[in-house]
Length: 53
Ligand SMILES: [Zn+2]
Image (cartoon, rainbow, N blue to C red; front, side):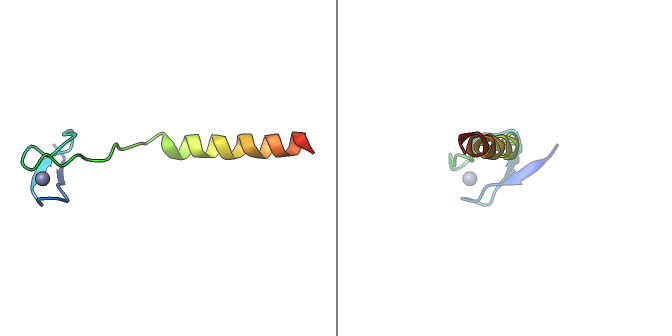
């Protein structure tokens, strides 16, 4: 079981927790797809630029 440290109260809590059960700190959503989506957007913009010329 992996644990993560709450940046607010420095308590170790379960990795799956979306918010700290002690201080109710809300963890930012871990977005694993984000870099891929960003890459697709960049490629799409490049294609748009190429076809607009
Ligand atoms: Zn906390």
